[in-house]
Image (cartoon, rainbow, N blue to C red; front, side):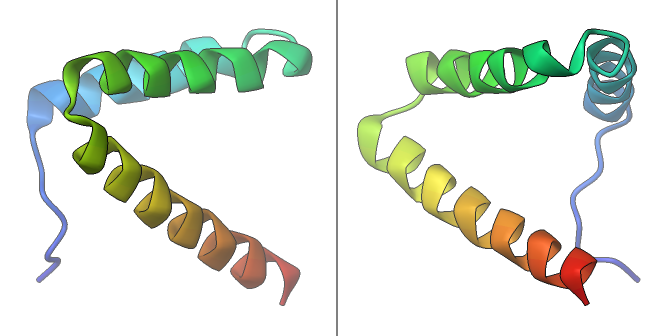
Length: 69
């Protein structure tokens, strides 16, 4: 059993956002991804946002390492 959280509404919304994002030109992907992070930042206390970015950085590094192997 996975320890990943699941919320059917949030999952559906993020899947739809992902589908819309990949229809945009590649040059816009970073903007829209960082837009989401900026929206999260505006709703989150500074330390929680810093912690999120650190965890995100680790997760991205892990994905890059996996893809490189």
